[in-house]
Length: 259
Image (cartoon, rainbow, N blue to C red; front, side, top):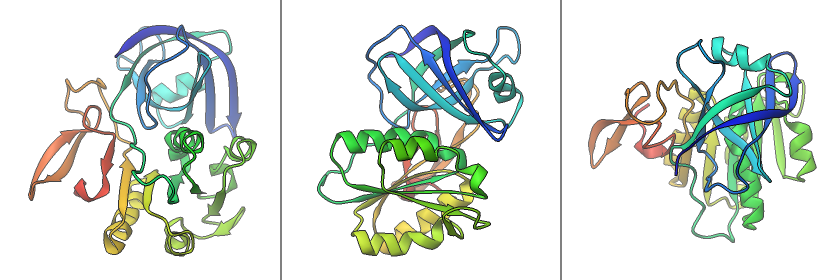
């Protein structure tokens, strides 16, 4: 079911003048919501015209959280919103992550930069469903992995990776995947982040023949399949075609995506 409603900003947290988390009070206690789904947020009344797609970072007790990075006009306006202001929201949209069939086996969650947003909510749900997991959270530098405190509060098993070595292991996320997969006997991989990272995760998954689901971060116009602004090249039944990330995704099986 799709809802349109007005929500009040009740809490705001920023990191390095670059990343922001907004907590919004919404008029619902319960929504059928899967990790990986997103809402379209109207950042202000007259400009910009289009809403901005934001993945759900968390939802509990009428509080919806969005985590995002300042990357354009829309997120710039949203970044400077104050507690007490209100925004209009439409959603939820898209297909989210599905849970593994064998819940006793460990899964690997991978988040690169702002891709932590849907992965954070997925980790909470994995924890609630008693599915064991390891989370790799990587960024260029320490300032690019800002949700450390929130992850520690939930006692998640997290491996931090930074390209410059300013925190955690030094290197790229992909450098540590194979070691963890073998050590923890990982049965499936769930990831969100930069395209190059997702592409390497996809190739790795294909090489060792392991299930892999990927949430694409992609520009969207309408969010509900009318504009084709989020077309993704997909391989289906041996042929290539285009699907819409907003309604067919943003979560796809990695082997379906034509990189």
